[in-house]
Length: 206
Image (cartoon, rainbow, N blue to C red):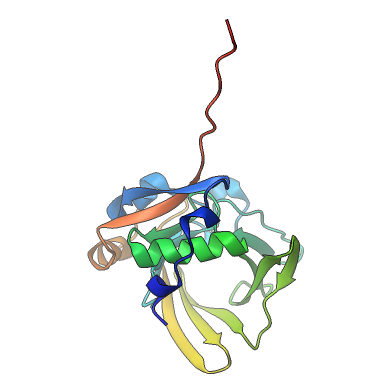
């Protein structure tokens, strides 16, 4: 199914606390939250990661807005959250974000003790309740290949299986890796990031 045909009405995200802004894709490291050494996120997951080979219209992710639980090696990523996920700045990318925002999609990342294997468990909000998406519908895993490189596997409806590379393009200290150039060549010229809406303040009556 083409995601453009699944775009929700604008009203779905109007009135929420988030909106999308357009940025130049080669400036993601200036606009996104970078998970750095002071974030508490393990070094293996710090920085920004490019979803190289991802067939969907989203491109870069960060754990910059996440809190790491060292005791269980888990964290949660609010996929719809502010400046932690980049979307293609076109109809398909905006349509996908609208779906994610409406579902209030959260990924719970669960890694083993040595941070080499992980499971990404999706949760959505239904009738105000947080509900885990059944594995029969969606299952995601990740395997660490080397420093700054993970393999991401996805299964949908028990039928579709896809693998892509998760490559670090920005380190925790904010410096770009060699993979940044390949990302900039591959990514669309413009990306979209979620930010919190500015609330207009009313002037007090004279």
